[in-house]
Amino acid sequence: MRIQIDFSVLGQTEWRDYALRFVLGGLITAAAGIIAKQFGPSIGGLFLAFPAIFPASATLIEKHEKQKKENQGLDGTARGAQAASIDAAGSAMGSIGLLVFAVVVSKFVTSYQPWTVLIAATISWLTVSVVSWQIRKAM
Amino acid sequence: MIEILVRFLVGGVVVSAFAVIGDVIKPKSFAGLFGAAPSVALATLGLTIASKGPAYVATEAHSMIAGVIAFFIYASVVSWIMMQYKVKAILGTLYAMPLWFGVAFSVWRLWLK
Image (cartoon, rainbow over all chains, first blue to last red; front, side, top):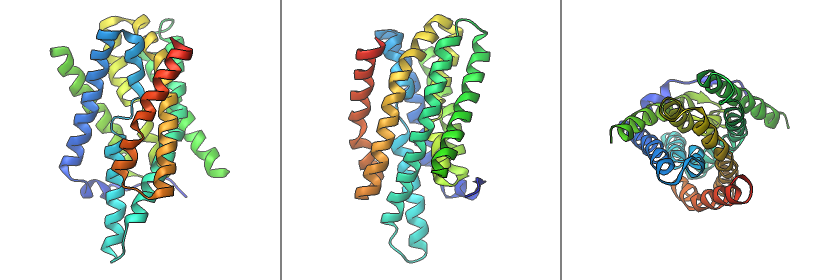
């Protein structure tokens, strides 16, 4: 299956779904900072990979897919759950890239220009995630 | 207080940006990659570089490895639960959340501490 961009999905998403993800993303980022301040960077670092918006995103995907089926007069419950499951499996693949991101930052941030390391780590995340996804697809 | 507010706003924007990219991309299995985007990490580490320096960032990123291992297991279990039992996404994702905490803290304590 080819990778496509479908902007029509943006119109189906309600403002409160965007607001919810903004608030959750903001809260976990603020919380990670507070935890690091209170308990040290070693504990705070754990929360940089906390699945804060995962429930909201999975619910949104389920809702969109369910709605699509219901518009055709069908029950979309199973399709919604399946779509959320596929998305979660994709996130598991993406976490392999996230692991590389964390390793690159932890190993190189003290030796090279920190901003350059963050950019390189982000490119590494994307590259490894896409390759992992392609390997899984080919299997 | 100002620092917390800045973290909240920057985190909200970065997380939302990656989430919107995930929304518009098809197929869903590929879009799911963006559910594991380093959004919170970029916002946090970016702000921390400026305020605390690279050594502090390196320590946070090192611990993040435990969080990522927990994230991989969490996302895999959620995927399996949703496919197998067709439960509501909000229930499947929230019920599995203690797993993230259990794995993250165990890996950190046993291996990374």
